[in-house]
Image (cartoon, rainbow, N blue to C red; front, side, top):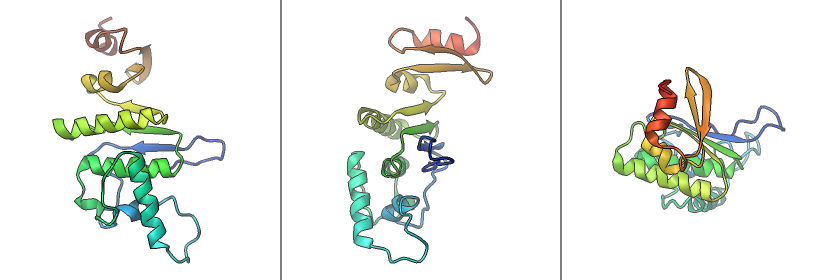
Amino acid sequence: MRVPVQAHPATARVAQAQDSAEPALFPELTVAENIALGLEREGLWRRVDWKKRRERASALLAEVGARIDVDAEAGELTMPEQQLVEIARAIGAKSRVVIMDEPTAALGVKESRMVLDLIRRVRDKGLPVIFISHNMPHVFDVADRIHIARLGKRVAVVSPREISMADAVAIMTGAV
């Protein structure tokens, strides 16, 4: 997850959750330290308020429904827990959109279900989620709207409630 992208003040803050095989956390740092990265902008030579840092991390994790020890090293977390930390950091950065690129690609069934539940919770809090995936059952499970691409171009925008998965795949592959 790259948090936040701020090329220009007028640009929306965006958090990007990358492929789950490559989490963007520092494994040797604690959860609180990873959340603080990019959020604390008070200067290089300043005193760290560790208590405040932990409290803020706990509050952000609670906001995404995570029960993770803020003093745990990020490298000891499961992949879904690491994604929760990245989403908490995105919320702390006041991101306006979360982009998740193949977040379930390297996960098992149980872990994928946890990530899909996380996507629903983030979406239900009013934060838009762009979920990029080739896993059509996952897409149909969480999407409000599906943008179908073929050869790098958007060819259709459909509602998962109004189209079958087979029809969506047919559009994607050019069979329709």
